[in-house]
Length: 216
Image 1: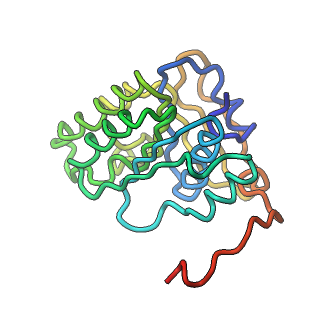
Image 2: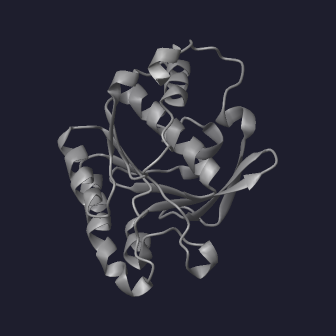
């Protein structure tokens, strides 16, 4: 079963085994679109729990509704919890496991990473929770690029990097988003695929209008 429902990206991820953690990181706009697709695709298969560690914005319920209707998914299958501190993240990931969700999507888990790499030992509890979750559900991580190493690697430190099985870096392109497979236990890396704009956001599909009172 595909992770995102985007053929050009899911083909890049294959083969996947049970228990493997998949991570996307890099270009913020591309990561945001991809994890919305991943949530909508997971909702087509069953319950999905989203651990969202961003204070403002990020998760777009209207885009999720649109993608869900296009896929024939049930938006009621999507559970969302938002974290506001680094200490919240391991607890929320553990709670997501207890919901019985088939898929857990963790968005920006290292938003509150320390400024100094010498303090990165504080992140081990987050990584450990993600690893535990992978024993019970499919885990997808939407991450950011680290502020160190010129931003080439994902945030989280070496323990996190070694714990994730499949890692894809996303970079902007005039025609869409360029996906580069940088880690995979069963494939030669790097491997690349272009996700076209038309594939990322299906244009011309009207799925209903929200009343102004709902925004208020």
